Image (cartoon, rainbow, N blue to C red; front, side, top):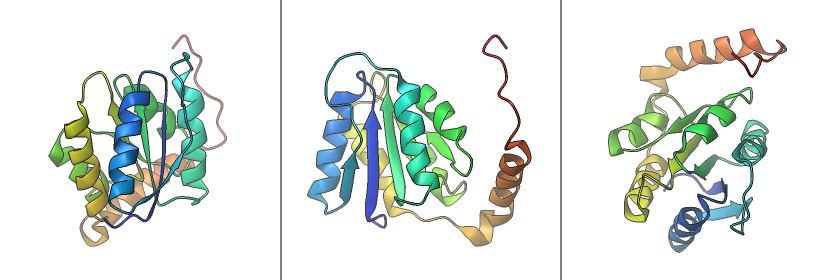
Length: 160
């Protein structure tokens, strides 16, 4: 594993999978900081996704993992935080390319669609790989430029 400090969070649907992934990483010697939740009381995933992404943007952690029902809502939320690149992973190739090609500091998992053994495998693949700057650096720089262009603009209305 290359990442030494990982932060993890989940909504109530993702809690059991979060706990399994956390234990798996700790068994491998990875320092994992758990931002919750730790109860099955319903919570809004954007609150957790934003809080974790803000810590990644502040460089308090190397990488972060978010878990909700599908992983999609957490990915959308995390990607709204400037400087954060989050990818919802469901297969080994996407887990590898999330970091290798896109330099995604955050991955998201869907607890209702990804079982524990697959989730652990995806996290392991993502953590053992590094960004391939020589191959993808210019593309990620363009992603970062889009991010910078839209900072400070008002959010789109919830109605579309």
